Length: 69
Image 1 (cartoon, rainbow, N blue to C red):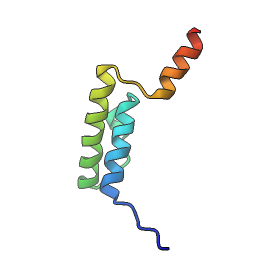
Image 2: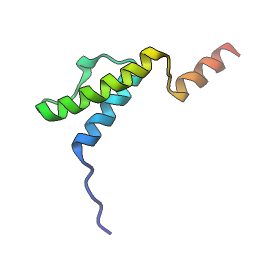
Image 3: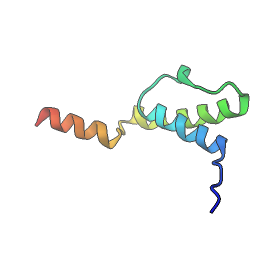
Image 4: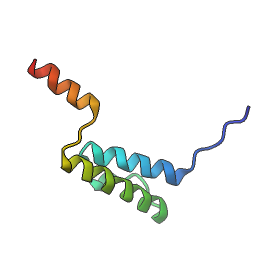
């Protein structure tokens, strides 16, 4: 069975979202091509909005609970 290559624009958006959700700076974008960079930035903005609103990754929540308890 052949494996289908993943769409790079979808991947760029997902990577940007994850970086924004973790609170990383938007200057960490690894893409140079305008369209992929735009997709990464769109994902970063969405993820960063959740980060600012107080949403955290489950691993971060578990680590904080383990340190306090």
